Length: 318
Image (cartoon, rainbow, N blue to C red):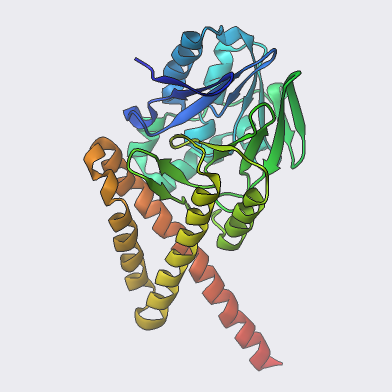
C-alpha cells in the first residue's frame, strides 16, 4: 500500500516507492482549487503516484500542474507517463532543462552512463513530454493555485544547473528537490547530493545561503519527507559540503586524485552508518549515491585544478 502523509494543510507527501524501496523517494500533492504535483518520480513509480493521488481523494484528471524540481530521472522521468492519466496537466520545469523532457534521449543516455543499466531498468526510460504541454519557468515566477496558495519558483543551482525550489504561501514551506540533499529523519542523516557533471560547490553553497535568508517554516524533501528544523538542516548541509571539500583537497595535495576519491568514499560511507539498520535503503545509498557524490566532487576539484594549471601556463607564457 502507498504511504500518504499530510505534511501541511492541503499538502500530501506520497511515497513513490522509488527503486521499489519505501522511504527513499517522495512526491507531493497540493490539493487546492487548482491542483499541483511536485515532482513526478521515475516512470516505474507512476502507478504508486496515481494510487497515492486517488487515496487523497483526488482524481488524477483534476491535476493542473506537474512541477518538476529538476530533470534528473528520479524526479522528472515519470512526467510523460503521468500525463496519460492527467489530460489537462502542464509540466513545469526549469528553463534550462525543459527541452530535455520534450526530447529525452540525452537524459536516458546520461542515466546509463552515470548509474549503469541496472538503474535504467529500475527507473524506466523517460517518456517524452509533448512540447505543447511543457512550460519553462525562471526565478520569481508565480503559480496561483487558490486564494491562499501561491507557489513561487526559486532557481537553486549547485546540485544541478536546472534545479528549482518551490515556496508555498499557505504554510511557508519549501519544496527542496535535491537542492539541500537527502534527509532521513528516522536516522537523523542528511546527505548533500553532488552528481557529475552538474555539481558546482560554489553555487550549491550560494543556494543554501539564499534559502537560509528566506522566511521558511518547513523543508519538504524529495528524499525523504518533511522537517521544521530549517536553519539546523541548512547549516548542516553547508558544513558537510565544506568538510567534504576539505577532505578531497587535502588528499589531492598529499596523495593525488585516486586516493582522494578513496578518502571521500570512506568518509561518506561512515556518515551513512546510522542508515545501515534500514536495509535496502542503506544498500541503495552505498551502491548508487556514494559513487555519485564522490564522482561529482572529483570532477569539480579536477576541473578547478586544471583551470589553475592553465592560468599558470598562460602567466608563464606572457
